[in-house]
Length: 151
Image (cartoon, rainbow, N blue to C red; front, side, top):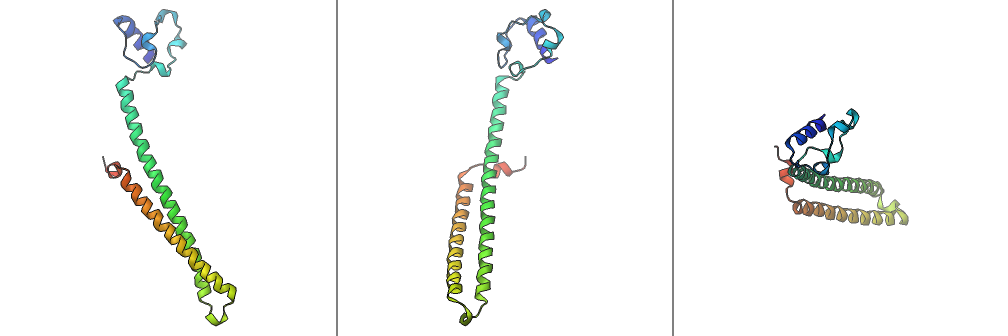
């Protein structure tokens, strides 16, 4: 329907239309087209002006940037949660070993205790680096506060 109106307007005005695509370059003959052919609307026959397309593209780009930032935040959060779970599991196992009196511990249990302490230490360091990276990322990407501000 929109195409019919644009064709009739174009034929009446006999001036080129400012549109995206090949519509302005195509010589349309409305009388030669059947009803079904006039109802077909393709991407090239859109009524959006180039300026409108550019504005829409800019909006989409800003939205993409916001989504990329949010994805990054969520990935950091998931990594943090996993590290915390791993640390808690190791601490629980260590707590069970520490509950055994020192005189009753086997050499293997003492070695395991030392291993657990080392693993916990490494995971805590890894989590600290992750938190630092998340903070650097947050500061590196401008507009974070603006994207969350109410509009």
